[in-house]
Length: 90
Image (cartoon, rainbow, N blue to C red):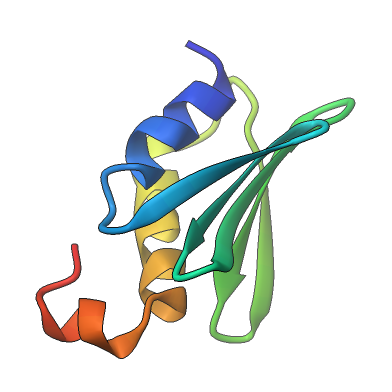
């Protein structure tokens, strides 16, 4: 399973998430807004929304997947519309 496949498996479990392929990876959106972006250039990098801006995580062999999964969910929560959060979110 590739890093993109692992991110996809987590992201698509979140309500109303849509995957949009890009030239070098994929964007994951909720309500038309990107909350996670995977780009595979020299290294596979995951970009997420954080309260203070953006977080970039290199998805290498030593990545802490439980932490990455939590960060993906948090990014979704920061991006999702209020109606999804009020309905119970994730």
